[in-house]
Image 1 (cartoon, rainbow, N blue to C red):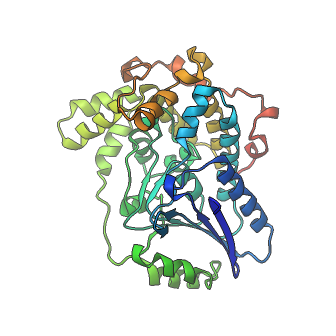
Image 2: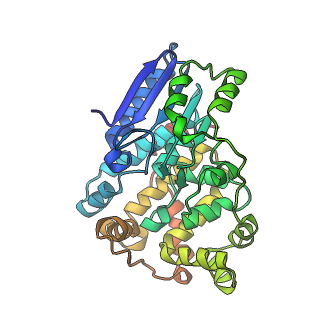
Length: 368
């Protein structure tokens, strides 16, 4: 069976990510199938709205999408396979398509929603989570940065929560995701199949019908976020990663010690790149942010300014340590946050392409 199932139920276009053995991690064929489906439905008058969900090994729901297929990235880095170039270009075009989609787009963000899964869902007009949801952008742990529009949607989180999420890769439960503007409503996980089936009879352009559907299937209760927003803002508003981690380590509270320990495990170089990314992205449109991230990803895979080959990159080492060998002992270059310099960071933001040949050139002028 296909890894992406697209079917029409009445006026609702239904997409199911169907690669449960890999937590629906995205491959290039999946990205292409999703893009073709959404383009066809965008121009099909019969289709009034679109909904997307994932599957787990037991059936629909339970997992949304764990991101891109990072084992494939690792193999490509070591072998010189150029396919990731197409992967990221086409994935970012898909992210932009979702952000700019002219019809209601509903994302059922049940279970794991990380990396590329956030890219598929953050542009949705209705982002639905459950008690099983775990949202995160954990890329600095594997020597990358929060891409797929992460600069855009994380920088729109309240105050300095975007910096905190981008650097630490902290996983958010439903209540916290809603509090930070990364989800809209929490549905009852046990009733997702019924909610999915009933959605075909809802006119999502009718606010009363949509509200009634949400009220019927939403999780009971009024849980409040337990995020320590004061500490997040106090530390992650500081001017550099070095200043952030030193302040955290100088503080005696458990929250600060835990955050510092998280940062010390991440790639020092990519922490600094990610902080610069989030702060630049606050002034960018979705399209401009994705174009910037496409530049950044080229430099992650081919960091010529660092004098490294693809197989010597932070990404190659991070994926090796956490996913391939699983020794959880990456050897980062440089090894310490304090040793990262601006000369290492700023070239990530210099486009390797002239404007007329940028792989996302058709998007750069778009204003969302």
